[in-house]
Image 1 (cartoon, helix red, strand yellow):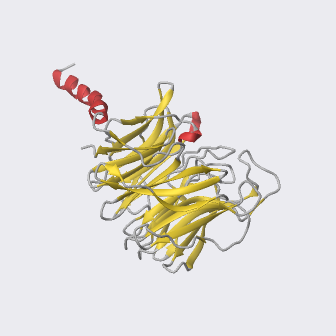
Image 2 (cartoon, rainbow, N blue to C red):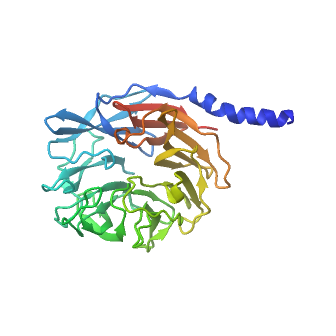
Image 3 (tube, helix red, strand yellow):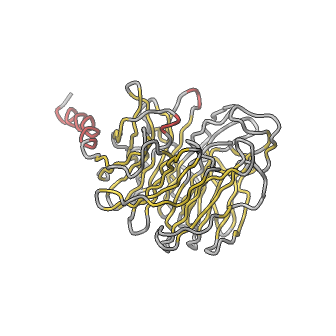
Length: 398
């Protein structure tokens, strides 16, 4: 082996070590036993962290903090309640709209059934100092599951939401997750500043019952990705696009052929910049767990061949970001050394990829939830759940 080859291999081997030394844990603003973290970033690069704290006697508090230099601001309360649905996988979120206003969602029980809950939203017009009276984002009035929400800014800057909606499911008989029979649907709504619900739509009539949704804005309009469910129980990832004011029919990002009689609770993640789109997801097709990434250069109309980006033993629970040079960053959970780790990797459309970086050692149980990642300037910010919500930063890998 020549010296150049040896040097190249040594550089690849050193990349995770060098990057790991740049990961800096930040003191978390969240209390002991906190969970369900979510990160969002404003157009001017301000990073917001939200999470849930349990207050005892069944009461929960949705809180947030803002990144300030190398730390976090004092936590502020968005809402509190004793009738919430608090779940490791179906967690609240927060978003900053283009006009600087904030919106947050959480889930409130609507009936006695385990999965009877509604999508509840509140807005703040003053940077989070005060929050509006909460309202429900759907008008069906059915005591059923409404969750796995993605909030995003519509093309006109107004608040929009997609979620899994169980209004067409019947309570008689339960599957392995406790869901009733019938079809889980994917729904959309746009919400005006005064709370008026508009443009309501059913995007897919039959989807996987409990996998996260994800949405992004391209140069041509919104795209939404989710785990679909066919009549043959294929649980692959599909996409719908809002183009020229109309939603397209669902189509597969890639036909993995994962046949599963149940929900893996492991949704996809989409990111976009202009017409460039990246979708990351977990699949267990062929009894071979993989985290895959596919790129699109035409706003999600078509996708290239997926790239396997994990390190051989992934749990999934993905998050992805699209970078200005056309590459993408994917964060996921990987089993390692009897436990696991939060990892991140940079990938290019031609298949070139950096060595993965271990952001933090962490478990892979349900209680460890879904790691989160945002980019502010040239700094990555991460959040994950250990015994509490943890946070860290890292320079963008070059």
